[in-house]
Length: 366
Image 1: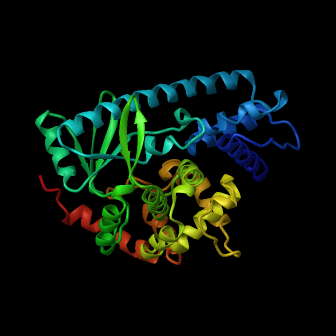
Image 2: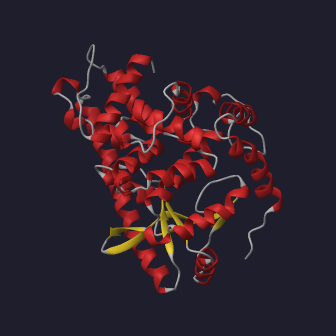
Image 3: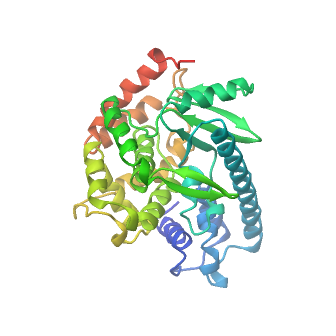
């Protein structure tokens, strides 16, 4: 996609995400242009956000009717899947609570509620975190009911429930640095009284406090940037969270959290990208970032890598090995190591150690 068309893509993204603005075109978009926009929207998992820009376009700016129809069919699929997920969330939360297990909804549908049109946010699975030792209790509960699950190397396991994939996470935050565990546990304890709730099908679903939701979403972005990349959807998540929750956030405390977890320098990059490209009002940023902050290089990486780096066209012909799923994995990891070492050194250095520990040393205790 050329620069001019990419700029149009981001115009559409901002219009759909915030529900305001007008599309500025030098010349009408061709069917080929719209097919390219749709392709990148899929790769960045923001088809719904781009679709939500259509009501703000003039008739001559809209995609051809045939493409709009296909897009509408896709939106119907997304809406149906989200409705199915919400039914599973309500069912599981109630079931776990009745068994004395206290789940916390993480990311995904827990963040979708901050969007203008929540049912248009694409969400692949349900992520549960748990209070204290309830992770083990939930695993035993599933085992007793003969639910088959599979462990993943990041202190989690997954399974299918009524046709929806569900993951349980032992860790609330995707930090690689093990020396932050004590501090993170203290944060969970300190902010327990400020946990929020989301009502789904009449059930009050537990969410983390706003500061910790932001920490959770933003460290998840950094985790994947350090590895193979992440899509624009997660940046939209962060932007909508800041926009919706800033009045409820202790700004000084959030700044301190980012600093103590070693995320502050990288967070400045994130904030700059959210303002310049995602359209978050600068007034919704909790604290100022350095004026000379440059993020064009980071946006380029996000643009090319897409959703978790699976469709990065730069590495389609790359070599795969038995140790890595992604092609040219070592080259990509080394490139991101050099890019982000300056901004999040603790996480970047801890990443390979964490991977070795999970792959060869750590065994999930049953």
